[in-house]
Image (cartoon, rainbow, N blue to C red; front, side, top):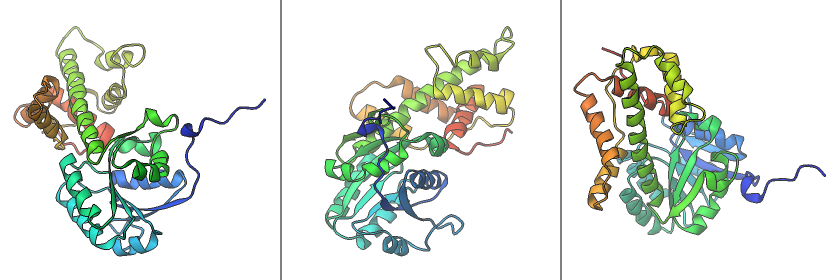
Length: 310
């Protein structure tokens, strides 16, 4: 008897689907390519003429069949707000908008109400995977109505890694829940990176440690601290031993701040995440090997810009 096919939730959907994707920055560009490899037809729009498929949002909406599904992948804040406001005036009843950027969950609720007034559906989706998502797939956290989530499953399945859907995709709850989960995810990420970075500084400062990169490499298998972030830490040291070419100034994307604000608002103690956020602020004042490592890790997983060493 030959090998049996995997259960339905383990297979990628094969049904042809055509969506619009607005925003072809580094992550959006990679998402377009992964969607196409997963059998989803994509028409992408970006102001950069070198990567766009069409010259305008109007052309994108003409190209995508109705009822349309349009994924928005632009910077959070004013840019996302402007795009969704424009779509609210151009889409038709029954169309679906997915915000896959890093919007604050309170903005999702505002955008959902704006679109609902035109009978346009809305889903928010937290996306994790950074510059490695094209190759490895993305972890996805979606918020919205169950029927809208079901409608978008072929898109989610094309983006996520192979395997059981529940291992890389979750319908978290109603509108705003996806980005709320991604906000907490990023807050945890702050704390994890800070712990690795402080360990790096402790090892780097001790003269009895003669093989610092080898120490981290030896932790990659079998230890309780092994993780993909640890693998990226080793990669960063392979590329720049001693981190001589990188400054210790570390940006914050905003989600760490939002996580701390939510912790305060709900009286939830979050000392590790809060301390990690404050450490980033401190990096802008004093030289710190630990913050060099945080900056290197952000570059490794997300392609975030670093500053050259002074």
